[in-house]
Image 1 (cartoon, one colour):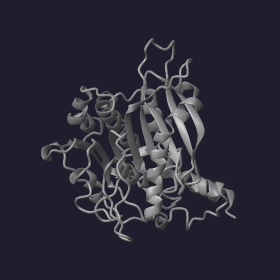
Image 2: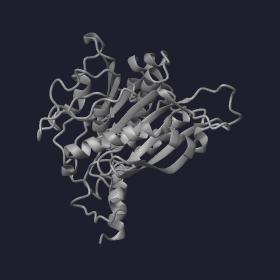
Image 3: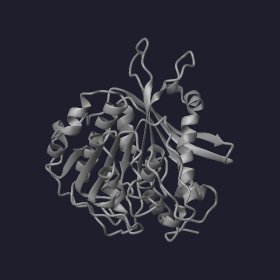
Image 4: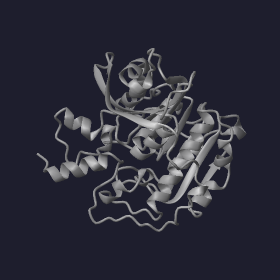
Amino acid sequence: MLKPLIIAALLAMASYSIAQPAPDAKPSLAGPAQPSEHGYHLAKGPFRVVTVEEVTLHDAARSKDLRVKVRAPAYKGDEPKDAPRFPLVVFSHGLGGSKDAFGDLCEHLASHGYVVINPTHADSIQERQRKGEKVTRDNAFDIRRMTPDARWDRVKDIGLILDSLDKIELDVDALHDAAGRGRVDRDRIAAAGHSAGALTTQLIGGMNSRDAENGEKGPQPDPRVKAAVVISGQGVNRFAIREDAWSKVAIPWLVITGSQDTTSISSETPATRRHPFEKARGREKGGPPAYLLWIEGATHSSYQGSGSLRTLRETPKTDVKVIQDCVASATLAFLDRYIKGQEGAEKYLTGEGIKSLSGGKAELKSK
């Protein structure tokens, strides 16, 4: 049985991403001071955030219960008459993670008017322990768990969430009005994810994955998803992803990665993590818009803040707060543009704001 301290460390790591423990690793804070005026709505938004830590969804076809966290925006005063329904973001965690991943970003999005739902997938350390499995340093982040069936199971989790919105609205008081009418807009849905969750996001968003084991195509895209945010995603070199894997993607993408975005259990490189952007068609080739947020000095777990860096072998060369602000700015601007339909957000996506915010350490590209 693991000692309590080791269990706590593993759970802390699982809240962030794939990596290995290194107690002596300390983050470098070499970035510039925060010129917040160059960010995109970095202040807390106009909505208060109501959080329900756990809603359980049942999938009879898989004999599976899925635990999700729900963050719902709520008006601080009286709700306006004929208030519009809120758009939805479903955020998928990395290997071993949980519904607690990327808490700051999810809270920020909710304060700006997005319902955010975070599932806990079957590979989660928390979920495995809940089922009585012994989790050790050796098996906590075992990449062999990401079999074709496991990858597809994650995609089915996202589908289950979208199929269960009626139940979620009833279970979360902030998501229905006095008459019982739901507040989630089914026509404005985005998927987002980090690492293994980025693969989940790409698959449900239309990337084709052909399994090396049996040659079968992977899950089909879900037409309910209208945009995708891919953080530390996968390129051509793994998971049966071929050069043309993104040729039929039909929704806008935002890809986020950085110059130190590697892990000890993956062959992905910063170059391959750019593939979901570079190999997407983009507008020039008749495809949907694609964007890349590239951050010099960003490591695999740095995108969600400094908490993970106390226990993971990562030393970002850019201030973690700068990285976090760049991710928040680009993500909110992208969602505002392609989920809320706010055309003014395009100016930020194609402007120099990110470069100024980061002191030249980050840039946004588009095609």
